[in-house]
Image 1 (cartoon, rainbow, N blue to C red):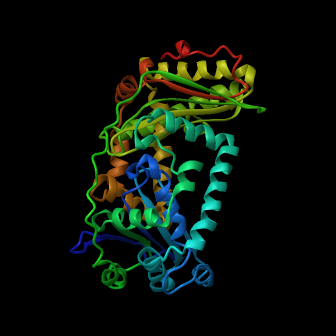
Image 2 (image 1 turned 120 degrees about the vertical axis):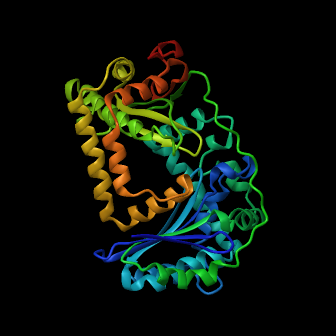
Image 3 (image 1 turned 45 degrees about the vertical axis):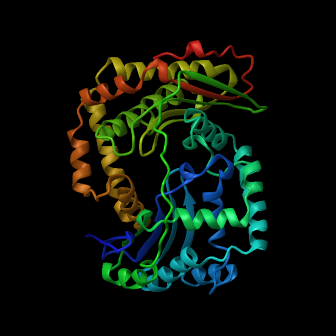
Amino acid sequence: MITSTTLHNGVRIVTQHIGSMHTVTTGIWVANGTRHESPEDNGVAHFIEHMLFKGTERRSAHQITREIDSMGGILNAFTGHEYVCYYAKVLAKFLPRAADLLADIFLNSTFPLDEIERERKVVLQEIKMRDDSPEEYINDRFHQNFFRGQMLGMPVLGSEQTVSALTRDSIVSHKNSRYRPQDIIIAAAGNIHHDQLVAIVAPLFSEIFSSWQSQHVDSFAPAAKMMQLIEREMEQTLVCLGTRSLRYDHHDRYPLFLLTTILGGGMSSRLFQEVREKRGLAYSVCSYIISHADSGALVVYAGTEKDHCREVIDIAQREMSRLVSEEVPQDELDAAREQLKGKTLMSLESSDSLMTRLAKNEIYHQKQQSIEDVIANYDAVSSRDIQRVSQELFQSEFLHLEAMGQVSDLGLSVDMLAV
């Protein structure tokens, strides 16, 4: 079902054929994101993502949007710390048109000066919108502080200062140098034939060249235990409590997925049951994983009343301690295992999820992994595996807390962080 071709310059084309689907999602990925910027041009990768929809030599910005709408499709993009993706989802019969449109914006965008200035205002508003969204802001702030001291900790959007300082020359130069053929993956999934996509994109992408050499990326060293308090007038107090985790391709990632699910990954998770169902302390409480090529974090997030903030933090630390000191009961492990296996299998029904899976496998594993192997890896995890990984990750010296709200008089201190 999965077929791949590598062009002579290193561009990879990988497809997954699902004949029963009506749609095809095609994505052009670049394994180069915010982490590969400099402090001075922080936000440029995200800014380029915006600009590639603002006109090419063949199409104006309005023509781009009108063309995708005429196919009833979706055209969008997103930027991460280690990659950027431009994608289109259309009915299978429109694949040639969608692929040509994607290639055109990726290869032939003109970066008009007037559009750069307009889009600069848009991105500055996006930064303000993020800062005005408490939940988004605190999770973004956690990432910045946990990975502080390196580009991995810089915000994807950049800052008002860096975005305001970007010039057309710096934007175009960054795009031309960082969009190297060996970092480009064209991934497509759905009712698609591999040879058809190759015939469309190979002539367009075979001549891409960049002499830029990737600079050394500092390896991640977790900082010492830390607490950051953000005073803000809010009805709730928001909390992010996290610790170091595993890199994206770590061999223990399956026990990690399961322990995170057991801790706070759903309505039956320990945190949801204890914090919300039994005590009524929060509407929203969960745990999630941040994964990068060489590092990661496991984070507990909750929103609660000011007077219950300390109690919620204590519960989260107590549940981490339980995972360290006790093996997970077999029935709880089996339920979490089936939950993750079900989500994995249900994702096969979405061409955009399949496309993303293809690309991330190429970026982080340099190979494709079958669904059968994924399921087998989940089945192989034991309660002892989960306890072993918990003992490695849940250590007091690596805990990091972000709390936002009316927090200055809560008596919170770094000494209270302990597993």
